[in-house]
Image (cartoon, rainbow, N blue to C red; front, side):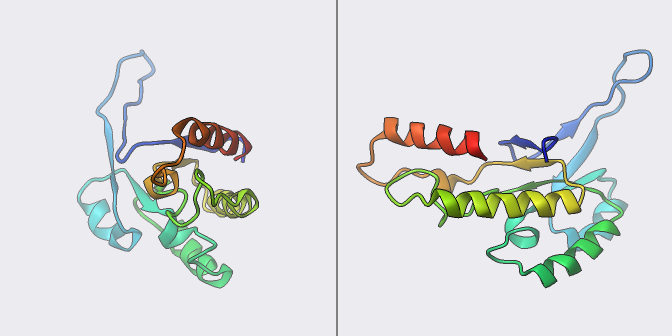
Length: 152
């Protein structure tokens, strides 16, 4: 899991260098449902980004459901390159109701499932989990976020 990369973005274009150091045509991926794989592959997309809540979240996806999804993911023609929407909005990483143990248990399970699916990148995003409650000290929220991000 140490090779997992966390980023915050919604789309990704990868430019690969050739042997002589020049760039080749960018590979374009899309954020889309993995069930649309055949259409995406036929349209020329080189990789896919899917939501964690749909495929990897231990809150929404049981172990049995995950195994079924994993089987489908491993058969994709358009490889699953990354997942997004890391932490759900009701699992707060800032504010007075932060449950660190729940966050760490959730993220560990997500990491295990991503590893099983050979997903190497997670986009953090997760605006709902990072949204400051009204009147909450922004400096305290920043400290909370940094602390939990380091632990994750």
